[in-house]
Amino acid sequence: MTVQGPAATTGQVASPAADGVPAVALPARRRAPVWRLVRAEVRWIFRRPRTLVVLGLLAALPVITGVAVDLTLDGGAAAPVGTGPGGPSGGGPPIFVTMATSAFVLPLGSLMTLLMLMLPLTVAMAGGDALAGEQSHGALRGWLLAPVSRGRLLLVKSVGVLVVALVAASLVVVSGLVTGLVLAGTDGLVSMSGTELSFGAVLWRLAVAVGWATVYLMAVGAVALAISASTEHPMLVVVGVLGGLIVSVVLLQISALDWLHPYLLPSSLPNLIDLIRDPVSFDGLGEGAFRALCYLVIGLSVAYARLTTRDG
Image 1 (cartoon, rainbow, N blue to C red):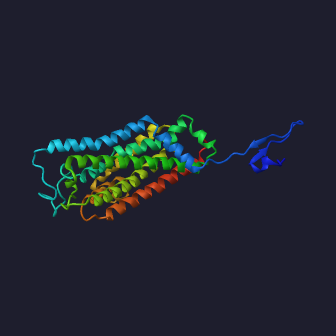
Image 2 (cartoon, rainbow, N blue to C red):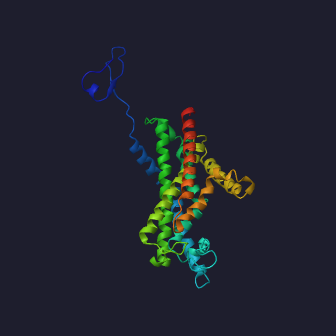
């Protein structure tokens, strides 16, 4: 039975008449806009206390590192940037020594250090809460009643993990840059090759570092989403992701497995130091970004296949 008049123009449908009871117009179900779902997801992520605690810790670690290195080397025999063993002809002094004299090295050095464990842990937590955490609490069914298709659900959750990765990487770099400027001033904008850089050149390199780190973390997040779509225990996601990264780092130390190293995601991390040198070499960074994109595509494909084939 169709409805004539205003109900037909407002997207309403009529329930069939029964036992002489007149038909009742029922509102049609509309699909929720993606932007509204993304906004709700991001707002929910940053309302979690554990997310705010981890982000605060990420912002504090570069400050602690910079102050600790500055106090340790204050008055000591710290080699100037670009001099001593491994200067311009070598690779420069060790990165933690360079942090004491270069406001540019501190944010990138902190980013490289935290990309080994702390930043992947943050993204793994977000990926575990995105699907497994909400399914364990029964909140995931509310998304499907919105109504939201499972493909759009994965898209929204992926954007949420992407925002967490971008915010986390940006916090580390901004905190490290501000700390470096306070400790070393604008005269400390020196590369590990010994060349002095302008503030604009430093900001450009740091922006590239944040973008590269976001792609790397999103690859970790895609793996976390793939595991999260297969379980109801978010801690299992965190343990699985961190366990895989730790095993990959161990495998990178075994020279007999050189053939396997190009396929391991953490093998990309040493390439980030190229941004501290002058001129910058983008060969290793491009290879690392391509490797991360491969992990990203595979992880999201597995997550989508799992979401669209499971009953719950």
